[in-house]
Length: 103
Image (cartoon, rainbow, N blue to C red; front, side):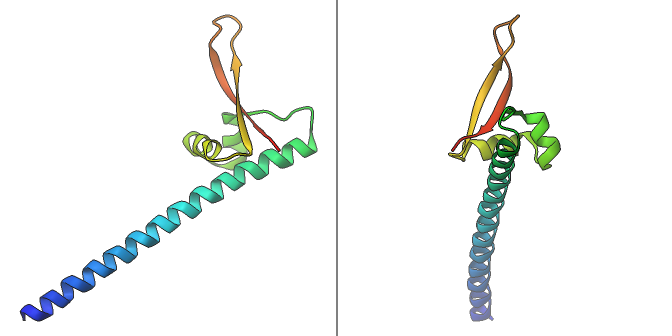
């Protein structure tokens, strides 16, 4: 009986490790997919309309179906997305973050 419990405990440990690896892979692939989605949208938008190439978080949320934090995380992890600030002229404080594709 004790041997079977030890075997079961070892199997449970291996299974837990496999689930953790699969969850980590899913998380990494999901972050990459969101980053590529943002990069591709900004690249294509810049090609289609070179005069308007910066976009707000609200615009990107509506177009891409990502949350604000997902867009920010994707932009921070990307070398192809640059963030700019829009400064309110009255308060001289940043009121929006603008995103654009950089080559």
